[in-house]
Length: 239
Image (cartoon, rainbow, N blue to C red; front, side, top):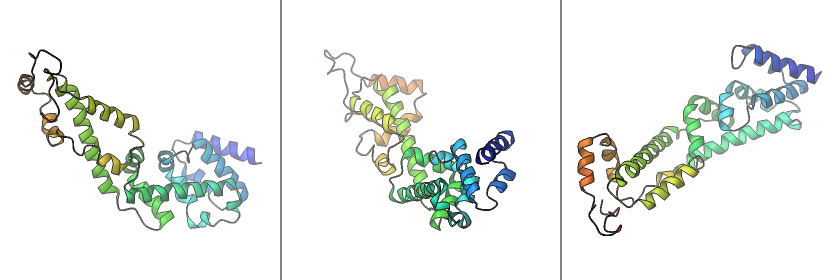
């Protein structure tokens, strides 16, 4: 019976024109029963609805039902795989909300939260009792970091090369950020450019990246006539 029911649910979902069929969800979550626990767990599995924060938020119609009081306290659910899945999702939401508060949220997760902000807020409110309030401030910090990072890459690629400006440390910084961007915690990212001499100038240099006149002036600042590579190289602190 379980196999037949699971196949019927899969077929119904595949035939539905909607990403989440309301009729199918209403049938699945009508009343908590052990058979439904098995079927819903299978449904979550073939939708990969518990495979990370992004998938979780994309499948909000499932989780808004499964995390409701009725289903969180459903008889016998804690003895089934579905109960473990519930706990996993609750932990994921609470942990990410705590990381938002502490500034330790990873940048990839933060991008996902911002993209699905209203959905995320409603699900966190279900499991925690209140919506997170840190998203706007975190989004502003993320935007500042992403903007400065883009400006820094343009500075190194377009300005340092043509003017013989030494940029090894900046290249290493850029590559390190690119390699670990998704896992980089927000508070760490926010401090990545602290102390860079060129930081106050990145925005206006970026705004002039398409100016041929400025490009000519910038090139004149180089020292092409030095006898050695060291003499032809400008240090970052000189910029």
